[in-house]
Image (cartoon, rainbow, N blue to C red; front, side, top):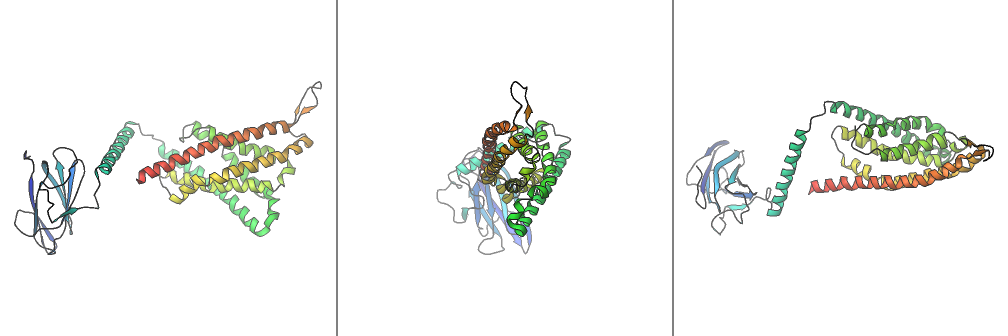
Length: 363
């Protein structure tokens, strides 16, 4: 039954004969080493061997404040772990009622926390419990496994495609040197066409709420890349032999060979720390470099579109013969850097949120 006195004395005895643990008894015998720690609601005691090795040990404690009579313990070959519930939640200045600490008692540094750390641990447990309760109220998606399987396969296909592009370009660069700059489009274009057409799915997925991200950032990236690939490079053969094509394709593939495997692993609830860091850090230098390379390609294409009149808009005779597509390209240059700002801010927020959450979890 529960005791209403200021303190409760608990004499515990742990007997070992050979390797057999016999349990708790009251008996005057040797005193073991006892290590303690506390939380706001519990006292943790850990009894190990005393100075005499395997033998009969007993210890008793007069606690500083009342505790509940319910005591739980777990025995192993080397120690006994005891948990005692406090009568009232709170933080104790010491464990024993006597001011002088018993000689056999010492802090359990494996479980020791100061009061502020214990409060933080308690808050984290409450937050985790609230999260579990909240998620339990949300109906489970019966198609979640199917969605994850679809997203995994999409990211796998894109990873394989961009890996082929990256490896092919790297090998050609080592073998041919600068000569590989001039025929990049003819060597790589078919696979790049496939990957960028497939990338339209990245705009569809958030629109259908298959992924938790906005539609605008992937729309800007996919539209920008496809505009450059199909309109500026695909419509003008004179642009296809420019060295800038090599740098555009190489920068795109370098980013994607880390981005897609990161999302692949996320589909199976797995994380590789190095890959996470690369996914959220490599874009800082590579994304602006990619936009600069794309801008150079646009600028180089303007006189070619003026000369060839490709994609020019016919006008009434009173206004002139046609409106050159180069005017649209000049407008597109301004929009391109606006898109850079929007996506750069979006990626920075994602990186900050990701590493702030990981730092909080680590603390």
